Length: 176
Image (tube, rainbow, N blue to C red; front, side, top):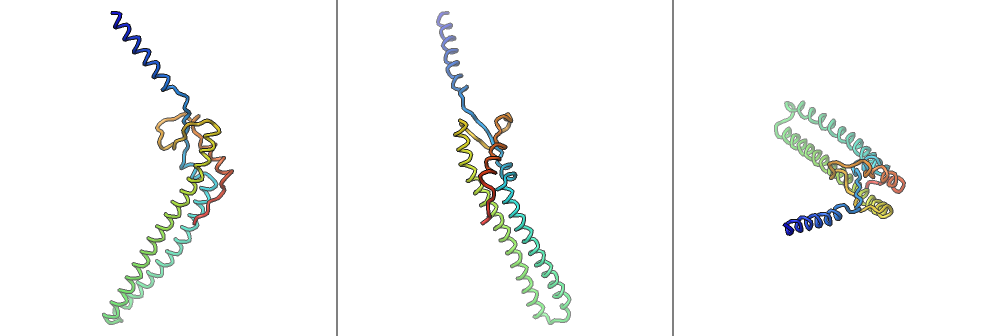
């Protein structure tokens, strides 16, 4: 009987000891990195530059496509006029031009995606020291990305605060 009471008290005592560890004073905050990427001045500058490149490339590709369509119509219209060997050569040349166009377009898209990734990496690398400095000044133990949070109080969201600091320190990131 006394032994059972002793075990109960001992169990409660250990439970209370471990509870204090769980209730430690670690401050965990979160930020929405995608929001920072899209809403910061630096992020907007990246988006604007990419849009300009996309527009100029779209126009260039549209012109090439129009020229290829005209050339295709010309080749088709001359089918009955040209002898078969000459017609075949023209079709092969045209096919090569189409292949070159497709390759150019694919490479351009890859280059733009690479530019975007490099710019986002630069912005993320610039954001890291800002977060470290803010965390140190405000005794914050952890800052985690919002995408890893299922539910969180909005009091722990630092996104707008970090956005203001980021905008004051980095206005523009140039694409390379």
